[in-house]
Length: 422
Image (cartoon, rainbow, N blue to C red; front, side, top):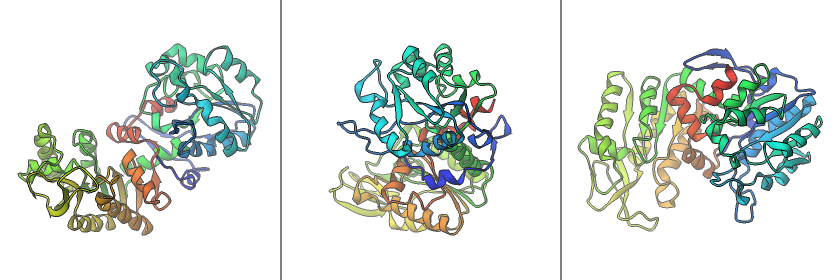
């Protein structure tokens, strides 16, 4: 997932008010502290993809952490980095070792990075004690210990002994109450804050949910209504317009009596879809459902395709993208919006034959942003689309955390955020 370094930098040297359901407080960031003489224990998100030879194929998440690391080093502090990588099931695993990121991280920082072959115990303790100001230490994968995901207090306490200051800069894992993301913060009652990635993410989502300049348009795509029910319920209370696309659209279409062929549908969510439409209407929120679709006779890029009314898809055909009439309607709504949230593609954009609707929406968001709208792109597929079309620097903010962002929208808070704000 992409986060423009220019965007991260725009959040430096500023203070933001963090608004959650529980709390209104001045956000504590690395800009509020001087780290001279401190050993900053930073929770970063280095969960990067590796190829078969363990080469990093996308270093976006590592690059995103650089401003926070460099700020602390510039102050005269030392940096201890902790992260997870992948989902190891049985302890230490070669392909999930963070040692594969050391050389690349060293080049990006222009500083030698030392490595501890464990994140707790004598190896980690000895390496942390030897660390001097201006130096960087990377700990081995946190998830090599099952206690990490269990949120074990004793494990969190062991981690906390390695540093003198805790910085959470891993928004992508902030929705998990893991030892390193939430539990550990209690051991730093006065020495804890957010890094630039976290503060940027929090400020952006709060700008959309709590300070949106109207009209506010939310664009919801993806496969299933069930994945977006809680988000839609929240957005109905916030947005002026909600645009629906992707596979989830066909559940809404069928619920209203449309013929959808063999398109994706959640039969058990038809009533839910109708209730969402009913609630939105009662609250004066406009919900836009596709009026036409690009349909195919097979789930394949080489399938036969045609454009049809979305309520009259022939038997044996499936909808894989929104059609041109829908694109025009959606583009007009987006063009007249001042705040835009996009989560989920309009179709199977991974296939060139069915990417036009997603690209059209992306282009409309870019155009609206250029005219002054604030645009937040969140969710893995939306981010993948923005990256595919190279629009990352043409929107206001691209979230690093798909699941975390969605949960933040749903609940208004996250364990990793609350722990630092306490």
